[in-house]
Image 1 (cartoon, rainbow, N blue to C red):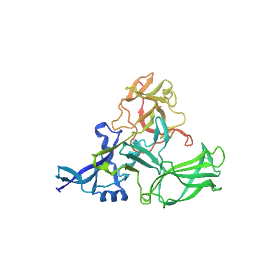
Image 2: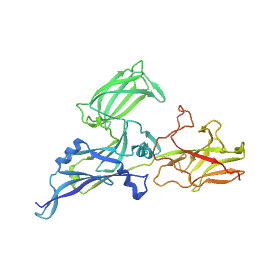
Image 3: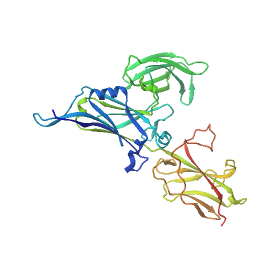
Length: 395
């Protein structure tokens, strides 16, 4: 037996299309990939080494050069059977930035399947036949024994009637628990159900509650990941890699990949004017144009005059929102490493003039807001940009 060497078994590469192609792996500056305890134990037993890299992480196995009967590199310890590697994904820095510029929702084509929300975990799943990691959302990461509470909704209406509940395995092929005729708390409308997974393996389970009465509408669903250890940690997500056969570890490096999608929201500009002659806007107005003709903007108060009610710091304010763009964009503008420099603020009417040649972009940190509309109105998120101008041009 010769000296030990290390061979790559597999790598995880995380990129982000917020960045230009040459910089796509920069997202890993803000992320941390760590094996969970069971995964770390598997790595140790297989004489394997986990290494964080600039593009994600790599797992290597210890090997040796066997020269008899012919030279060949062989694993020092050869694992066998089916294997699962589970890694914890944390945002270690600039969480506000990552969450703001990343679209973490799950889609089927153009259809929104599941919206990312507070408490959810981002789940990347792959195997040796699927090196492009599939993304999904875990509603809750819970211990083996806990009480699950939820509210029922029948379409857009609250539901408080009795329900039948099933909890199925990840593949939806086996029902692990069944609860019938479960009632909600009459004072709160909340359902409460003790669950005990202590006799079941860690992993993903599907929870579903249906109305006991015909047509048996589903009033609540959830994807629960059960793991005692991880349920106590503050994590962003999980990466799970499955090997049907451990032999695949030693057949050349597998590279599992996922590219985070840059988020797109409508941009809304608030242009406040400190001073202008009385009645000035009766013959002059403001417009935002895109010299690249990629996006269009529409004033909230046509043709581009101050809102009759909404003011910023007491100043008359013109509000202009992105409304058009590429196919299906509905005026949504993507966040990007490179700023858009083609949005211009113009004064039109009696006086025609470009006031600002390059408008500022939506902030890559902070939360979306909607100061214009009532909080009770369900609207898409906006990235709001505030500008203040001393005077408009009179010549």
